[in-house]
Length: 465
Ligand SMILES: Cc1ncc(COP(=O)(O)O)c(C=O)c1O
Image 1: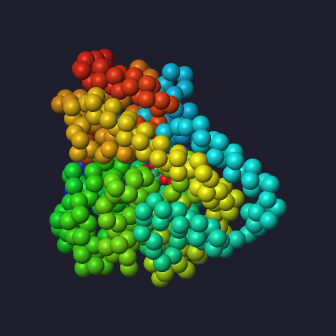
Image 2 (image 1 turned 90 degrees about the vertical axis):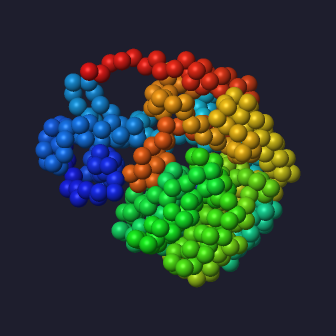
Image 3 (image 1 turned 180 degrees about the vertical axis):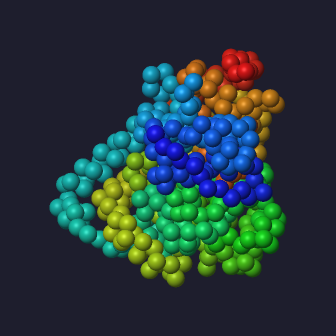
């Protein structure tokens, strides 16, 4: 039991209940609130903060939607145990288990070759004494030359531009965190799309950074709006996924890419280009690495191409940052495990890898077509090869209500709250991953369930007075 009470100075630019909800999230991240702790009674917190009880009710409800707390009837509101299944970051190991189709997390489509490639790579490593010696030894902070060259060739084959230095990371999330830690100090502002990858939001909170939400539309980040924000506060960096916003799948237009590069030069901020959600070359625009190489870092990983558990990623950067990133890597874990990079290297070199990638690209295109055929709200403009799609809900429907109804029907989807940058309001939409289901049949059944739930209207029981 705790008597946690935040000391909050309200910012007039955002609703108070959202600021209180964010303070709850921060307190959990910083260990001031632990799993099982009870939040203060609503009246007491309202008096302490000088707001109405209604504001606290909304704040607790927002924190609940974000998966941080749960309310127990007649008892109060308690902090969730992230390890017990309430966190949006819970890992769902099997996609279609116990009749549940989990489309809430972003996966590459399953294929038996993934395990076979992994098995083959592991077997090769164990049978090669020189390789065993190499993976068992300490190696340079940013990775061995052989590994970095192999990953550079891989990126080149995938059609990505190369930069001056490539460091090996433990996946894309690690790459993002390294960028934040290398380029910012606590209290700095960092900008991102108003809806963005939740791992970026989590990393900014842990690094005590101030998020700046930039509006976005079908052409990606609104660079004019970013320019206006810069009049008030220039961010240290702008993070974005230009080829496929996660969750909305918006693509940054060619004109806005040019505009962004020019704005970054004018105000001298860094650009973090996240390409982890893999798309084939023909679906990608010109990389920010090409438009503003002196100030761009690019994050990529094997997660959506080979498999998420390998934890092997790349961080490309200008040479001026090599020492800073190397020093952070040494401080964190000396280096990323060379064994995992060696496994990834051998997997990529195997003859099955190009076939698997070609299969994945065609499979995701077929699955996206099924999604478009199911929902009128999705037009051909939406991505053809991406793993996710974003479904705006019909007028009057709430994402949390639709998510709960779908869950009771065995279909898991993501609600928008974890994607909201800072205290941005959440739109009523859901994100679904077409890559996650075991098969197209399973996907089709899940899509039919989503359609039915949306067509039948709100049937959630009325249980609040
Ligand atoms: C846009 C984006 N960036 C980064 C990541 C994290 O990648 P990794 O699993 O390699 O850490 C993800 C994972 O879904 C993502 O969607």
